[in-house]
Length: 87
Figure 1 (cartoon, rainbow, N blue to C red):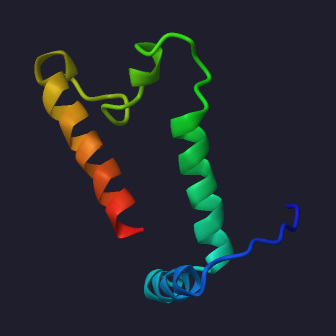
Figure 2: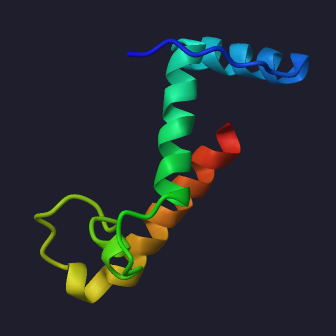
């Protein structure tokens, strides 16, 4: 890993420290997770947005995806929004 220095507003630092304590992880771990989220959302590896849907329904092995695909995608979207709100 590479060490970086980040300047935060006091309120950001307090909220980050509180969240880290609540989740029992380090602030560094939260930063790495946030960077991963930003990179996934802002940097598309594919020029085809349909290819970005691959894997959104969850793990392989579900036999009813063709029937309930909208449900699976909706659940995944709700999980992502919940994760964003908890930050």
